[in-house]
Length: 472
Image 1 (cartoon, rainbow, N blue to C red):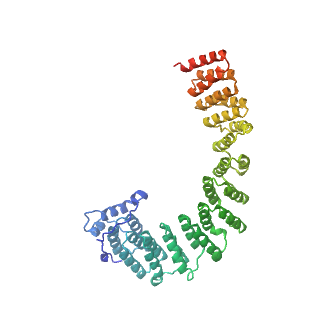
Image 2: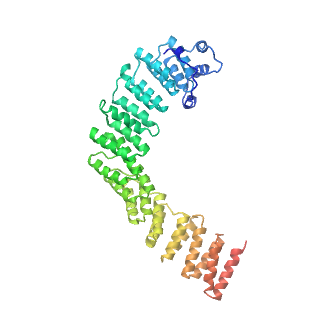
Image 3: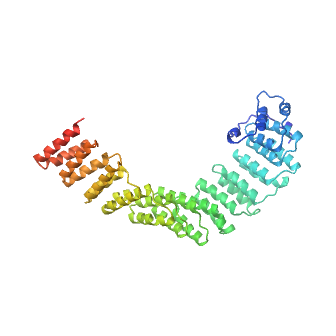
């Protein structure tokens, strides 16, 4: 490239790049050369560079060029100086092509490409860089034109290059349709491979276009058939369906894929289940889960918790317990969240007998309920006819300091008031006051109404409590 021919006074807005000083280790020699070429007052850059006595070795040239993302003019001067005494590598030329293109200096970029052709240094990587530069700038037609002139520069047009151009186009926002337009024109001349379709399907996934994804996937099956090696394409297609509220279609395709020995991996199932759980879609999550487990894939703890949570949200206690029993055999051991999800579900569905039994199971596994869940459990147990179990929970949280105690304490008092067991209410209340547990004003009013119903003796007991409650 003849750098003297480059117009370095072009006023264009340039894309911003991360500073390479911040992102990588720089040799002292490369740092010094870079500082020289980027000095605002440097008029005779080449003399300043030569005076350092640092030879422009291949490694140093590569380092300096990588630093020059925002300094295209300086890069040109440095490149010209380095080329006077050393033969530059094809990698250095490709760095220069990339730098010029990313700074929208397309004429100098093509000057460099032509020089590389003369020096027999052109490669596919050069044109991949050109594609990326044009696409980043939104110049997709120019990127496609660059593909069509490759043969004039002696670089073969093959499916790998096609895929590189498709990747560059699809990388930009909402441009998969543009990529498809190019694909439709070139596919007869250069037959696509599985990667070609994977790129397009990833684009449709990113854009959420279910209809286009189905069309592309159908063409893929016809052109390249089924293969476990095409997993990334299958993942993108199925994810597009699930995210596009077509989980039923995804399940149908999964059954076909299972028959073709082309099921996706755990990553897809994990992501798909996460989406379905967020949509509270047990209708499709359950068959998806069954296909996964039935194929020998072992869910991890996060996936088990997600499915148990989904069953609990849909009040399906039996299936939640089934997964709890199953998970240990698959190497996923329940944690605090697992137990609390099921405990809350039991409380919500007023499974009184199972609440008490499961409470002991949680304690045994060192995953006790939260103070909030203990309060809810106490109310459920008392209302459901098992006040003794409610007392067991109360004693546990007091002894083990499951704080704060206020919610459970007030639930216990109100529950026993409703049962008319006022002697126990009095004992509980006195103990709570001794412990300086906050008894709510609304609870004290409930106690007053309940003690009043037992006559004068009951009112006297309440008066003693209220005096202690009001005392500072």
